Length: 244
Image (tube, rainbow, N blue to C red):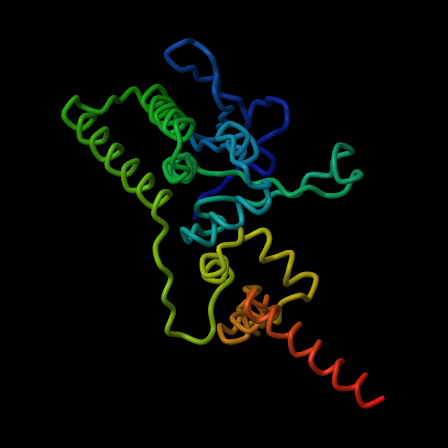
């Protein structure tokens, strides 16, 4: 289990020092905090740098579930009481290992993610004094190119979701409906969509038949059907008037 500093975002101290790394242009991209040889990244800083369009809370929770990151091994949650934002309420921060930060950067699938990942690799090399041999660097770049290609194809041609199970996760429900994960959470929070909770965890599940029923709850008639309704109404009204 990895031991992180209790608060890696406090001002620099003897036991908690802020390491400053720079990229090729000499500028610091993302702050890295180090304690006892272990380095951590503020997830909010990474989220801001990646320019994700998702809200931070939605983004980090989805990534943790999607890639099975483990708390206290890959990241640590910290509660920070701040007067800024949320009316001075407790704000949850996430301290990420460099490995998790690299993986999150890679799966973001954009130029900023690629830049952040290379930056973290350079930070590791600077801290350890070890640089990957040229052959390994070439292989990493080739793998990175393949990942970019796959992500690009998935973005242009989303996979067809065919689910054979009845109970699905929120992520699967979001993919099935085409809605964002944040929207799905809002709909369940507002009790617009029926959902279920496990007794042994906080995960939310949805029954696929009920989701399909919700998706098809409002049917819009075709023009032909509307014309037929109008014709039927006119005929019925004519007969009623004739009878009177």
